[in-house]
Length: 166
Image 1 (cartoon, rainbow, N blue to C red):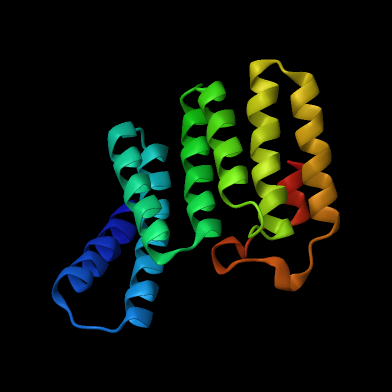
Image 2 (cartoon, rainbow, N blue to C red):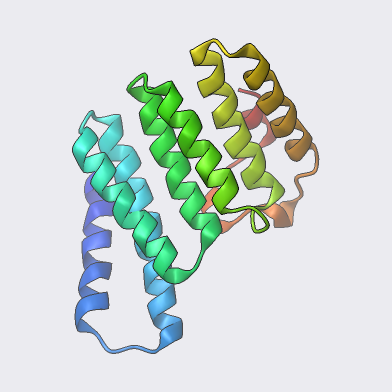
C-alpha cells in the first residue's frame, strides 16, 4: 500500500511541477497529494520507518495547507498523532490532536471531531490521565451521536460509530 500511495504522490508532484493548469486544478492536485501523503505516512509508520512516515505526513500537511483545506490538514496531523502513539509517544500524540482540533475549529464535521477526540482519548488513557481520557470519550460520543451521512469528508468515508467506541 505504501508503494502505491508514494508512487501516486510522486506522480502528482510531477504534475504540479511540470504541467500547466488553472487554480482549480492546482487545488485538486494539492488535495490529492495531501491524501496520498497521509496514506504513505501512515503505511510507512506501520512498517516502522519513522523518518519516512514523518516526511510523507509533512508533505501531506503542506499540500493540505496549499489547498487551503484545514480539515484535511487536521486529518493528516491526526495521522501523525497515531504514529506517535505507535511509538509510545503519547504526550506528543495529545499535543498533535489538540493542534488538529484547534487548527480545524469551525470547519470540522462532527465525524472528524469524533475521530479526533477518540484518538485523544486513547492517548490520554495511555498516559494514565483518566480525567482527560473520559472528557475526550464524552466529546467523541457526543459528536458520534450527531453524525449523519453528509458529515463525512471523502477521506473519512469509512468511519462508523463502532470506530469511535473502540
